[in-house]
Structure formats: structure tokens, C-alpha cells
View 1 (cartoon, helix red, strand yellow):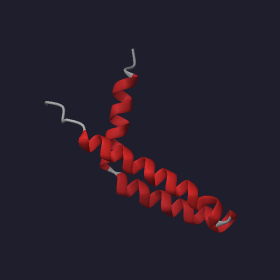
View 2 (spheres, helix red, strand yellow):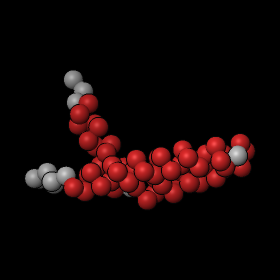
View 3 (cartoon, helix red, strand yellow):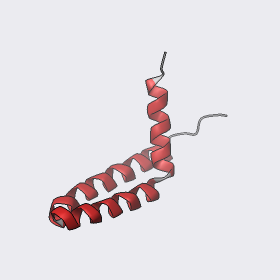
View 4 (cartoon, one colour):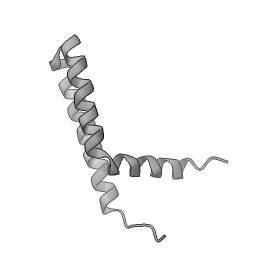
Length: 68
């Protein structure tokens, strides 16, 4: 059986470990889309994604490390 909780934890760890790369990619994609449909439509979405990534990274950093 699939451990969805474990998968979610791994995804959160990956996002937290690569937050700057993710935010950079979101900005690049947002700039591309913004040129096509208007930056005012995309900027708010970029801000929400950046905030989510920052929040998740902070939560993961505050979480105690698993004993290996």
C-alpha cells in the first residue's frame, strides 16, 4: 500500500530544499506568461506561490530532524 503521508513529507522536503530554484522558475514562467496576458494578472499568483514556498521551507526548517 502507498504511504501518502510519507510521499507528502518527501515532497515538502524537496520543496524546502530547493525553494530558491522553485521561486526562480516560478518567476521565469511568470515573466513569460505575463508578457502574453499581462503582468498584473500573473504577479499576484507569483506572490502567492512564493509565500507558500517560503512558509513550507520555514515549517520544514523548524521541524525536528528525523534520527537516521
